Image 1 (cartoon, rainbow, N blue to C red):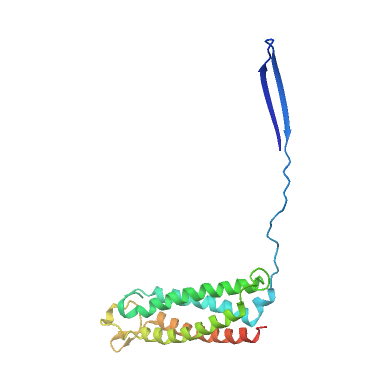
Image 2 (image 1 turned 90 degrees about the vertical axis):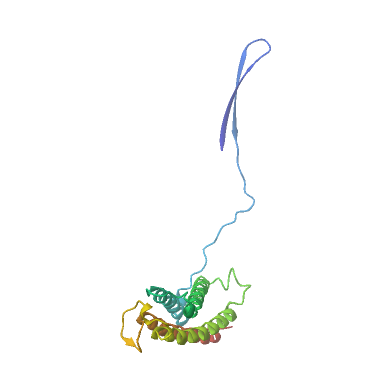
Length: 197
């Protein structure tokens, strides 16, 4: 970086003296930190584990969308508290599945984040998610029948009448997706156990 400074001073004899100073500053860096280009594991995306992980993420998004899409009492109404738990669990499972997908695609489990037991965590997470999604499929299937409502007219979905109550198709499809997610997470736990070193 170049800098030019000009100074004008008065000498003792009454004359003015102009001084021009040029300064060239060079910065030297002792150490440069940079983020290197990491390896990208294209094979993981096309492997069975990668495909299941992507399907789990998409199914989780669909479950959340289907549960909140029904106009009616909403998932936070007294008897529907199980749907609130389902929404929280599906959101957390969605985020963790996305984290696992990114970790395995960019090989972070072997390079930058090798201090964490990723495979064991993956097995435990997938096993717990499988159990919870299977339980939530039963709960959501019960909610889709509408038989939990005191006043069966407060469900805003269209459908056939079942014991005076409406059948909520969106929640029934969410229950089916919960069951599919439970199976996918069970298969993912099995695959993660097989590929563990």
